[in-house]
Length: 137
Image 1 (cartoon, one colour):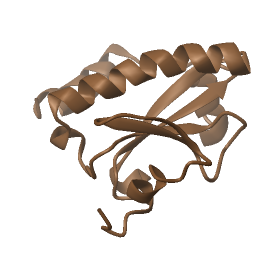
Image 2: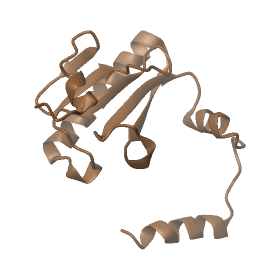
Image 3: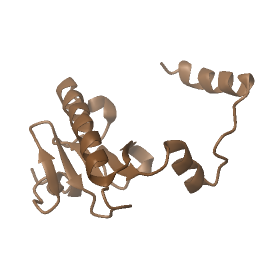
Image 4: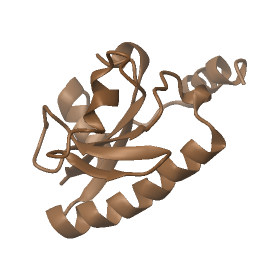
């Protein structure tokens, strides 16, 4: 389907296609943040997480399981898997980034955002965070 989506088109780019089935595919990121930066996407053009079918969700998670092992074996580091959608993306096709990272997630975020690595939240802070989210569930 030619819908103008660069990520839909990427599933036909053999030079970076790692895996594809009827529900999802994996490609090497065209602008890799590090050696081993890949993306997993639904084969169908989907822009919202809630629009994924149960089959797509299952297939994507099965692929994560396989990729985690492959990244660890090939690059020697655990894989960070991050959902990219909405205001955090330049593409209107839901996708997950898979990156081998030598540090824990907390260290990666704290370094990139200039935040302290460990600061324990108070009961009041944690309760306020919980309350903001709970009312939407």
